[in-house]
Image (cartoon, rainbow, N blue to C red; front, side):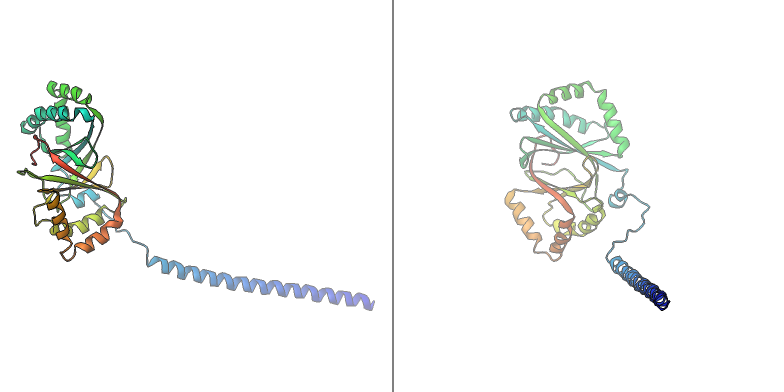
Length: 286
């Protein structure tokens, strides 16, 4: 009997010890949870200091960056020409493009037409302006469909091309509007593929930077894409020759603030490209 009592007492003590251990573990777990929750809240608060907050906007980025979206729309064309056909291709364009440019029936203007000198070889670049935006573009395209001479031109041109592509562009509000120039000049088209979501930031920096690049009248035009490759920026520059280009670009580094613009805009770029171009006879930009 004494032995049975001892067993019962021992079993009761064991169960009590087990309950005490469980309670202790629960307290420790609760404290750990509370500590973890507190740490998580502190960590979330700390991280929130470095999270970029997005301001709500009522306007599209293009509206904020351009002068007037309904005023000027640009189309840039890149034609890769068969090497043996480049002279004939240029002659074909010289015969037709100026007539469309001069005809008030078409609400468009030929801004410039070039052959690439350094960059992609055997390439032609054409830049058109449509005053009146998308309605003007649509009007021109519909009218050209009825133009038999233009239809024949396209058939003949297709025999000379390996590939072609285009983009629709708007102009930055802080850049010059391209106007005809007397030559001789060489032109540089610098194209930047930006990281998505960085166009406003790019515009903010270049609104200040363009002031550093006006001393030799080198700035011709600045554009950003609307249709085609998106988040694409094109800067068009004019120089007397390659040495003038080198001197002008080096001179920009002597101006206080230019280095800062470069420092902050380079991380926005995914890819960049430079073409040195020679204007053709049909180009208003010589």
